[in-house]
Length: 151
Image (cartoon, rainbow, N blue to C red; front, side, top):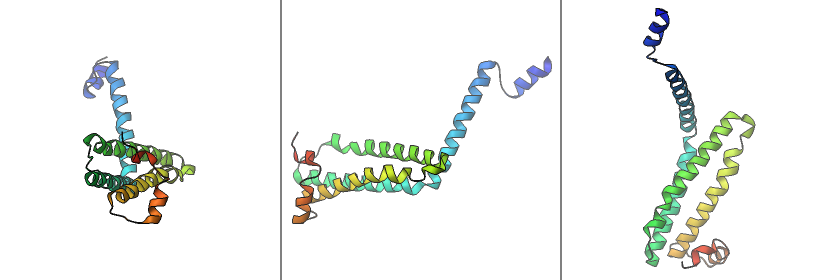
């Protein structure tokens, strides 16, 4: 009987709920450690997302300053985009590492999202007057029409 209490005291366990809490915390620690390894191995994905979202942010702020309609609420969206795209990239990488047959997942999901961000950046630079081309104007007139509307 004393051995049981001695073992529990050595492990700093006072009751059954402590066992459950220790188990849950160990499981969470394992998952976060594995996620950290995945993020460090595939850090270029997160850097690429940050660079492309940053380029779109700079283009949007430049366009807003040139047109004199800068809004801080729209500028704060960069945080939303970063967190959202990093979460999507993280989920894709976890699935890719878990299921080896899903090697295509990050490219298939992240490429369209980042491509739309690049198109948005090009359109913002074009509207700001940094990139000037009549052919680009005709192409961009059919893309992302909501930016031309005034809210």
